[in-house]
Picture 1 (cartoon, rainbow, N blue to C red):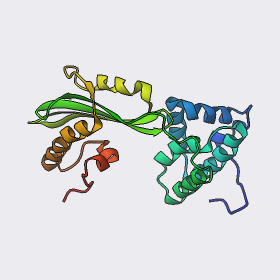
Picture 2: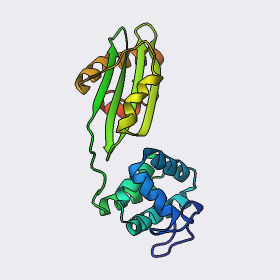
Picture 3: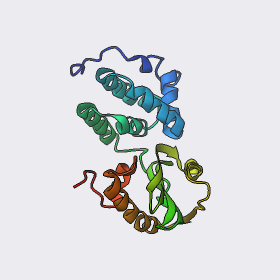
Picture 4: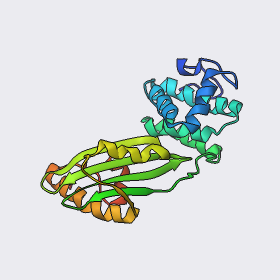
Length: 217
């Protein structure tokens, strides 16, 4: 980490210019409204080493202010991929200092459901911030457990329902209350974990909805 009060060289990701005319500032502005840009920024950020990521956090705060956009919304995708506790804490502190402006969600949680406990599928859509959501999709057969799973950590709500195309084509999904989807899916997940010893990929992000602990007893 750089010492307090001293800023080291900006990492390559942030070196393309700053302020309203800078490409990095333009990237931040795009990341606030476009999930693809936000995901691209997060992937590029995640490929850097710890010191470079710490500098990126500083650059995001400074350039977001120069662009007149919410630093909180630009930082949120970075926090989702940050594994270093100290850098994650600095991101959380920066978001808190901004008052979380731009993180209010404008969409609600919803669920698409097909079939039943014997043969079915569920697509859960949960709000993150703005119109950004995370999506979990699962399909199952009682004798085989969960046969298909997908997780998208960052997508616009308008595109979330299209993820059903990645689940079995013979399932017919319709929008149902989230509580109904959870009641249907919970016993499926319990049964799958008893047999396989683990939850399907992506479920851990939604496990709080099912009261399913991550470790297997």
